[in-house]
Every structure is written in structure tokens, then in C-alpha cells.
Amino acid sequence: MRPARLEQANLLKKVSSGSSFKMNFKAHSLQVVDAIKDLVQDCNFDCNDSGIALQAMDNSHVALVSMMLKSESFSPFRCDRNIALGINLTSLQKVLRCAQNEDILTLKAEDAPDVVNMVFESSDSDRISEYDIKLMDIDQEHLGIPDTEYAATIAMPSSEFQRICRDLTALSESVAIECTKEGVKFACNGDIGSGAVTLRSHTDVEKPEKNIEINLSEPVALTFSLKYLVNFCKASGLSDQVKLCLSNEVPLLVEYALSNNSYLRFYLAPKVCTSTPFPRDKKHANDLDRLATKSRSIITKSLREACIIGVWDACSIKLGGSRRMRAPGEI
Image (cartoon, rainbow, N blue to C red):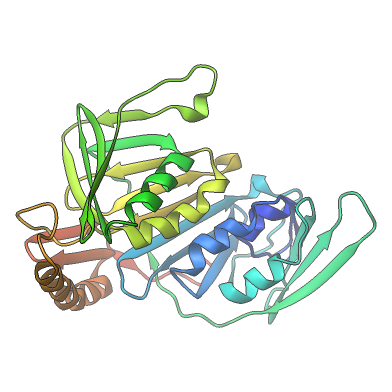
């Protein structure tokens, strides 16, 4: 395998693994790894001639992360054969912190690698730093995620979504997202009170990154864990806009578009369905937590038989498609 060069070392702080690629690193590059490492600790970076991909699920089987860095993000990029690089994300984060904002990162790995080699080259001096990260043998299933037609799609500034999640988490552990023809509403109810933020479609010709676009085929109302959404928002610096895709009885899709058609996607299963959008008291909330815990065993069993299928109380949550084992080196 040959090296790949990343022009923005920062992008790699968000994600990284190599096989012979060079990329330029920019100041926000730690954000990808920061956003992923709270969900999974160890994962495979699958490399082939199309680019570098990552897919992993958190231990509770509630959230899934899927990332794709297209080969066009690297200059040059060369991958002689398909290869999976098993990396501990905490170790990766420590090494990426050694890069300066404008460093050029080169990733290298042999055909049967024990380590992945990372070289940081300063763009304005002769300084070169070189590190090796030990690789891990990670037995990881690759889940098929089919294309889904969502009932509601919201494109909004990533900073606004981050602010909403951060503000509401001070009141509650959950947020109800309701999308209707009037707009999209983020609402929560907790021990100290309740709160709600409503957004409507908005177009700013001078600052398109501030646009809010809502496409709706039918009303949707689902409840999600704010803890996971706050973690997803750590990737906000990667993209000016974030896309939220919702449909009843399927996981929420949170997508950050990267350059060269690359992307970082998070999938999050809805919380327990109840007759009211929020728990009325602490005892009720504890009862719902016990229901969710009980049903998680159903989810775990289903995940072994399908892609992501969970059942909480009267709700069934599906991230369609059937499971298939990945062939060696396949993305």
C-alpha cells in the first residue's frame, strides 16, 4: 500500500487512517474523532480505492455512526488493495493533537500492517513529525443501511442545532422533535421546567449558510436522547449546515456534509413512545427507563438478525436492510 496525503490535518483530527494517503490538516480536525469517540472506543477504518470508510455502533445499540472520506479528499491517494485498520480512537486523538492547524498529514500502512504510520509536515517550515499507532484486530460487522425516503428533512445551520441541543439539555434528558407545515419544533420538559424552540423555513441570500429549509411529506413527532445529540454536535465545526431526516418508527439521521462528497452521518433510535410527549413526574420517567432497558435486550437480539431493529413499548424502530458479513477488506 502507498501513502495518502491529507491537505488539512484538521480534517483528520476528525477522522483518520491510512494506507498511503496524503491530506492537509486544518484547525478543526479533532472534531470528527471527538464526535465519534464518545460513541465507540475501537473501530475499523476500511480503506479501498474509493476512500476511507468507518461504521460503528455504540454499546447500547442506540446510535450508529457512518463516515466516508472520498479519495478526492487526499492528494495523492493510493490504496493497492482493500484493508481494514483497527484503531483505538483515544490513541488516535492523542496523536492528532500533535499536529499543527495547517500541517500536511501523510498516512501509510503496509499490506499486512501492525501499525499505521502518520507523518505531519509543516506547510511553512521544514519541521516533520512522525508517529506510529499500533493497530488492533477488531471483529466488526458491517451493517447494510439502505436508502430511506424520509417524511421530513430539515437543513439548518449546524451552529443553531448545536445551540438548541445545548440549551435544552439544561432542562431535560430528552427532546421531542415535531415537524409540521408550520415548521420544526424542539421541545422538552424536565424537573425544573420546560422549553421549546420553533424554527420556520428561512432564506438568506447574502448568507446561504444561515438558510433553514424544511421539506415535509407528512407530519412527524419523535423523542430522542439529548445526550447523544449533544455528542453528534461536536462535529458542527466540520460543516456550516446539518441535515436532519425523520420518519415515524425509524432512526433519526443527522448528516454533516464534508468536502468532495464526503460525509459524517449519525443515526439515533427514538425513545419510548408514550401517550404524552413528556414524562409527568420522576416516577413516570423511571418507569420509562425500565421499559427501555427491558426492551434493549430485544434490540440486541434483533441486531444480530437484521441491521438495526429495536422495540420500545408500543414503538418499533427500524433502520432497514439485512445484516451481512463484510468480505475481507470490503467497505
